[in-house]
Amino acid sequence: MSVDESMIHDIVQKVMANMQIASPASGMHGVFQDMNEAIKASIEAQKVVRCMSLDQREKIISVIRRKTHENAEIIANMGVSETGMGNVGDKILKHKLTADKTPGTEDLHTIAWSGDRGLTLVEMGPFGVIGAITPATNPSETVICNSIGMIAGGNTVVFNPHPNAKKTTIYTINMINEASLEAGGPDNIAVTVEVPTMETSSIMMKHPAIPLLVATGGPGVVTAVLSSGKRAIGAGAGNPPALVDETADVRKAARDIVNGCTFDNNLPCIAEKEIVALDGIADELMNYLISENGCYLASREIQDKLTATVITPKGALNRKCVGRDARTLLSMVGVEAGPEIRCIVFEGPKEHPLIATELMMPILGVVRVKSFEEGVETAVWLEHGNRHSAHIHSKNVDNITTYAKAVDTAILVKNGPSYAALGFGGEGYCTFTIASRTGEGLTSAQSFTKRRRCTMSDSLCIR
Ligand code: NAD
Picture 1 (cartoon, protein in one colour):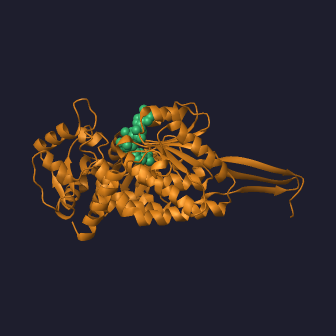
Picture 2 (tube, helix red, strand yellow):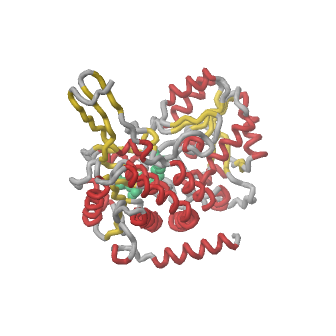
Picture 3 (cartoon, protein in one colour):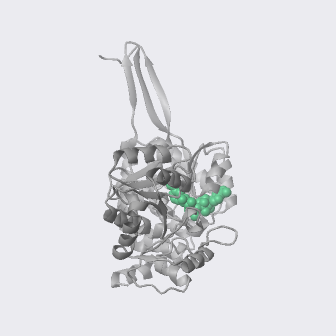
């Protein structure tokens, strides 16, 4: 640990120890003991935000961006310290990416028709108070990204975060409110409770003042919001396969896949979770994975030990393994790996539990297939119908097209690491809420608005 890193670590430990958070009186903005009180405060803030100009919303967002940069190291340390998942370096990058590439008010567009019978506009208006549920895997990134988009859309937001990431979330929500106040906006533009539970989540989901719910997490929470009777955006689980065919630049494919898979210890839902490799290049790919990209080849015995360690007898994930780095996972099964090891690889059938399960760990099973058609079939099977993310390494446009149509996912990265889809080393904006199940795809400010038609009859057409 360098001097700077240990200083930041000390600061984070102190901040976390001193966070008796709780009531607004204790100095943390937007944090309440009671969910109903939090919602009440959000309703009051919404009255102010609704009257703000786009320019005023943008001022708040620009301070959120600046503060996210300033706090990136602290929040990244806090997230790793509290959840035990991910790594600080990549989390810093994720925060900077969120600050720089999450769209603001420029994402809101007006459609206009003008003609003999007047002028009609369709504008993107706020829903009002949005209820958002956030994951433990990208806790602060999701809160910042959702807040920017929701505020850009003219909303305020009530968060029910994952209990395992509540301190990191509370710190982030306080920062967002400080940004709002600094920019002349209201307090409580984003709120939460000091102890988030299923009960506080249920209060939020049922509250009549909340017309839109946004859930980022596994299948349980997405089903819960979709069963609420309200409009809901569901950003759920994935299990992204990376298909490599015979036309790929195999050396680059190996590098891209390992870079994507190991980013923040495989926590992003879009990250490569397994490889499907054509027989003609499978050996070469495996060779590059091991010789040039820090992959540890797991024997059958180690695979079995890993399976028994990372998956519980009931088939659930062992939370102590999610988001851990490869060396830590290996040490749990008695292997002392060197510092060059970043990822664990092995070859196996698609049904292997370490391949078929969304592990969120740097473990990459390689499934060998005889033909491209079998590769597509296998990848579609492994994606489990989530229609979330899939990746391909190929120079054959026909193959890429066939795969894209068959897998039908919200994200498809061609010839790059998965994080290129988030605008990190790729074109396009960033989000940490990818709504494949409800169809919004990569959410942004416009996802958090409703379409409103405004018609002027027989006037204002000046053509
Ligand atoms: P999780 O499902 O355990 O928790 C997510 C959130 O939902 C938490 O706040 C949790 O408290 C809450 N929750 C869980 N079940 C609930 C229920 N029945 N009712 C109400 N609230 C409930 O997920 P996690 O471990 O925090 O995150 C990992 C999962 O989330 C992975 O499956 C990953 O793919 C997915 N994820 C998806 C996206 C996306 O954009 N699609 C982004 C991040 C994570």
